Image (cartoon, rainbow, N blue to C red; front, side, top):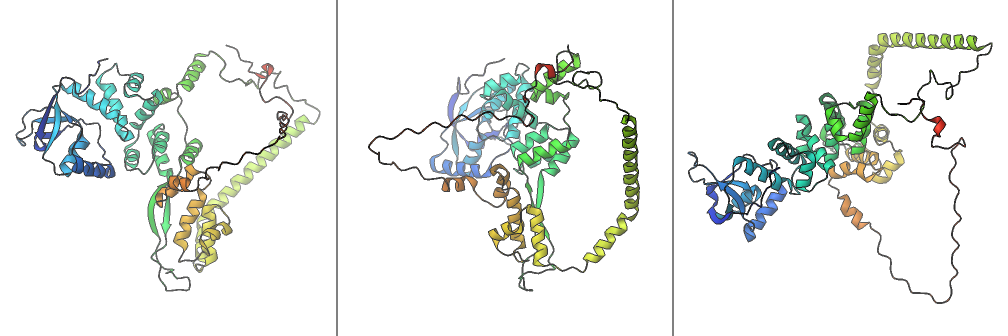
Length: 454
């Protein structure tokens, strides 16, 4: 592997006009945080550019004859200087080839803490493509990260374009993105759709009825809100299958991949339980067959057959009447009016909490307060953990860390020391270990292990 020297080594410090600089097309940073750039611009306007930019000589450009240098490192400082209306900046001019410039850009860029994970992923991949000696382990050592960190970032490159856009615009977090990136493209589309739920607003509230709202106002969809990472993980577990033999799984889950390789080779015990139900008479002894055994089996078969026929018959009937049944319900519901009880029932169903919990937070549920009630219902549905509540808090601009600091218990005041002898408290008796319900050891004994041998 080639060693990268310090960018300043052998460089020449100069002060050059901003007009003589041009940004590099190979800069690994493609996404710039606007708030951070605004802060940097104010700092540059007040104090100037304190750290020189690293540049290399650039060939003349017919369209821009004033350009003399290409920025290797310092694009943010350059943009802030332009926004602050500076005329000149300090630069370090260093001669380097395209490959050397790319390597310096990638390593210096990847060592920055504010780089977006997608830019990191593309930078890691570009660095590995630049030099075959850059393995994930070597990249991790070079940028001061763990091997798992590098593997996780490399997985972001496998995201479908829609997922990358959602991640780049902060609609989903890195936790959501890594779960989605481990799936096949088709499953990624489904998982990305499942990662959001939509809040709804009733139309503009007025004073046209007793509830203070317009019952005919249309419902308006609000921006989608991401569910928690734990909920998405649960959804993927229930709806998607992991291809254990896929190459990306073998990279991110090497221990599982090694188990599967051993299983495919026919060596070792993959499962530490007896799976030989058909042949092992020790762990699966045959059931006693009395005089009524055949009759019981025949009765069971007849009952299962009858149940299957009943389900099939009911399915055919429902397929015939389903459409008309739905029309009948819609016709009956057409005459219903929106009442406070109906709105309350909607919020109860959405929040999975009793009505008293909702009313305790917001008061009576009316059409005028229904939009607020939807927010309350969504907050209650995610209020089991701080991680789950984070997406709702972000949607409504609530700073959980600030609340946590405000609600922290005060430091315990120093208590005066008591004089005199104090009896030592007796140590609590050691509790007996919990016994499993069936009185047997939870850990399988040697005789309970698999009958398979290598």
